[in-house]
Length: 391
Ligand SMILES: [Fe+2]
Image 1 (cartoon, rainbow, N blue to C red):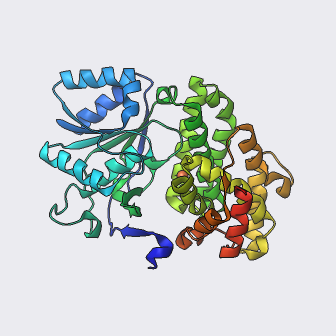
Image 2 (cartoon, rainbow, N blue to C red; image 1 turned 90 degrees about the vertical axis):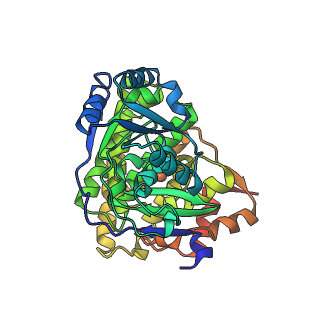
């Protein structure tokens, strides 16, 4: 593996079990379903992995106080930051083991959920060696999550991302898919508008990229269709912070993450990671910046199709995608993401030629293989110049 190209390593997991269906519950009746989960799993000592956003959720905090009163010990772990470091996960595993925890509840955005996933995965491994180099044996530690943004999709996928220094670590295992997910729209009410917009654009990017991915199948496409229609029909209510809009967007984001759990993401995500780390833009903001340009470029370059199902299949997929956004004409439809992006009033950063060089050399070629249209380095440079404003 060319580390300079990938700047990442992939910990592949041999996994034989845990391909079970995920249970989705809502917080409509207070948190009764959480109580059922605690009872069903005979929880005595719960590790609560959460970021600071939990402090805004009065109802959940009140309920957790009642859980404590009922005799269940809750150990909080918040020792991590966005784009979490491996060392934070090690600290979390130590807390889990040293406190005698028997189950995990993650509350937060993608980073909190990814940290919790890794704590679960590493908690039955050899503590004297790096977890990253060990073969992982799946475990059945009860694991429930409550996403507090509608976008990351981490609650539904077998992937987790952490960092060893600057090096991205992609961890994959069926064993880290949470058994139960609580969708509580109240979590979205206190999010800053920029975070709401960018996470929604992350969800939409997941759905669109999954739909055109070379790994798509009928199941993933159906999840993506539901996600796209859910994002479009709930966008106004979500941005206006209505209960219905927030709930609908949570469901749509969850469907999008079910879609990428099958297909993984494509060029939009491969190209957006460096925009986030180098320019400091939120992940979903960077993803939609890229996809709004990639989409029309793809429609005009289907002759470079690398999907094994052929160019005609790709054209059908792009036609259907345009119609989902309400367009009869496929080229006109390919600007739908640009139109949505413009309405959200998100920034287009200005960069130098030197920064374009940094970006074009940062793209993970493995992820580009999921993209249905071939992209070479020269094309990636041209696209970055369209995605961003240059001096
Ligand atoms: Fe994403």
